[in-house]
Length: 96
Image 1 (tube, rainbow, N blue to C red):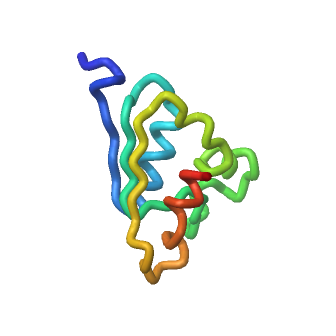
Image 2: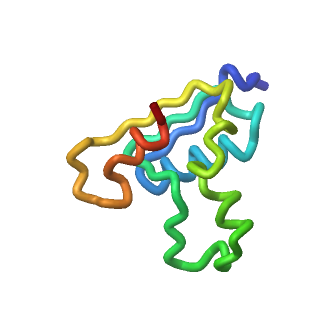
Image 3: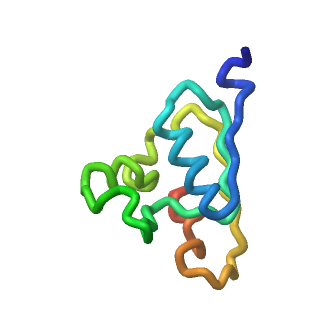
């Protein structure tokens, strides 16, 4: 079995959100996370989280970015992405 340093998770768009969310909720499992055109807030159109504030917060990567410490993180997006859910998210999540 590979150790975390040799294990990565990646995704595109909603998969980018999922990759970041899964990696951050499972510290020590992944050494790298890649989010391409992802977003880091809950976009729960199907009410999967039941409108429960604690569940939504737990599944909002931008609410607890420190959980990504120790991981190699690649956040990538097209700065001209027309989708307002995605545009600017990588820079916002990456912080100053």
